Length: 126
Image (cartoon, rainbow, N blue to C red; front, side, top):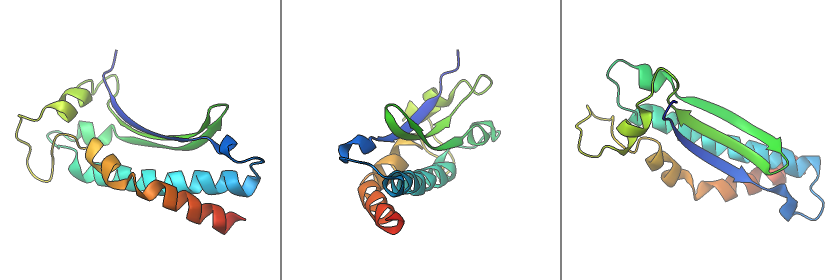
């Protein structure tokens, strides 16, 4: 079983009385905008030895489900089964800019932008 590291962003449009297509599109665009920034920044911070960990990174754009709208960024797969260990190991030296917490740091850096991006994108779609 692969041990991957994942950052997920979810938003439930049901907070609106009657979500319209413009609201739903705005939420998706806002989430995608911020999660793309998270992915891009994490690609700069992920430690590189062979490049396999960096190459395992994927950004899954916002998808609608019964639970809301969700997008994710993840690292690791069946071959790269060490993503979690590299992410959590604060003791190992990585050639800068590579570092531990390569996904958590960008997610934290951009969390305050999320609601603003969603709001801006909803307004653009109404």
